[in-house]
Image (tube, rainbow, N blue to C red; front, side):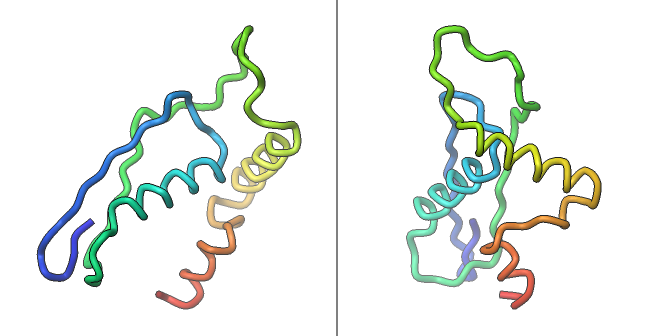
Length: 104
């Protein structure tokens, strides 16, 4: 994160277990933004780097309780199919769409 006055901030975060659902990733990115953006100065640039990404593993842990319910999994699968067929921009979350429309 770089402010207009030239100062910058950087934070990192990681997950104890792999994540693959949009809402989980967006919530984590939002929490990271809130932890990093501490000054009341306008931003010049913002960058989010995601590394060590991997596709959803279908093999479940034998002894762990399921973390996601069936509805969340079905929703994510439907979103992935729509994006695969019509492009990534075809389905967006409302808070992301608002910035695209207003240009803020």
